[in-house]
Amino acid sequence: MKSERLNVKSVVIVNLKITDLTSHFSFSKNMIARIRQKLKKLPNKREGILTSIDYKKTRYKVLYLAMFLMLLAMVFITFFPIFWLLMTSFMTDTEIGSLPVRLFPESLNFAHIADTWNTARLGMPFLNSLMIVGGAVLVSVVFNGILGFVLAVIKPKGGKIIFGAIMVGYMIPPITGMVPLFDALTRMGLTDNPLPLMLIFGANAFYLVMFKNYMESLPKAIFEAAEVDGAGMFRVFFRIVIPLSWPIIGVIAIFTATAAWNDFLLPFLLLQDSNRMTVMVRLVEIQANQYSASVLYMSLLIATVPLILLFLIFQRRITSTVTTSGIK
Image (cartoon, rainbow, N blue to C red; front, side):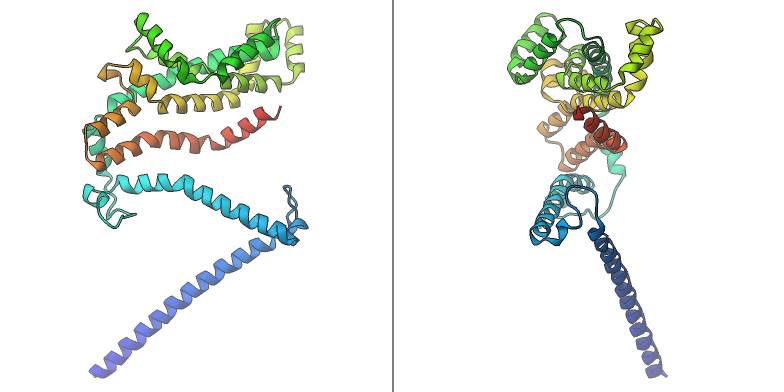
């Protein structure tokens, strides 16, 4: 009886293994079939510079393979640091310092996020950074939008000279004016004040160029019709230009928010009060004060998440609007 039971168990185990192997084989077979179907569509390719006729030539096949491998390498280089930070943030200090290097933590302890938030005291720096980002976005949209409207639509006398002077100033490296800027703000008593940071991050010639190019692409018939109806320039700007410019406004707001959030040097120089420090300054203090490695990595992850979410949500708008504004 025992031998029969053993034989039955062995038969069942063998059948399970065979079933498992066949399932894996069928899965891989289906994947290969899907890849072949996608490759079959390549000869019918008609979009882009290279068509199906070009892919029949050996040199274009080699070029296609080289470009594909280059894109894979760029994807790996781009996403591996984010993946490494994500995995390391949930590791303990022992796991981070272990050899050989580990890629994955033993467990995902989500309570470590709240512990790090409290231990590293990230609440006030987050609020300060959000306030500076909000003010910088407002300054960037209002001032650059009005100036772009004046240069693109109103086109006053001397507008080209003003635009040329702005572009010349844009070519000067910002670091060369750091000492005079800090000295002037210190003399005016504007240190430990977020207002200068809002103005500095918001005033950018690149945003002005984007506004100007986008508004120049708007149909002139709209402005002519508004002029016939007796609409003034302020009414044209707020009633016509602003509603039509929401895509570029969103993109410039995202660019401004990213620059203001990531900057370290200016907040470090101008905001001496510890209650006014930004997230980036706080991250440097966490490293300088020799917090544990797990707290440092989790703090880096927490500081990175808002910008990643912002980009993922508005990714399509960013790429489409930048392309459209750069065509002209």
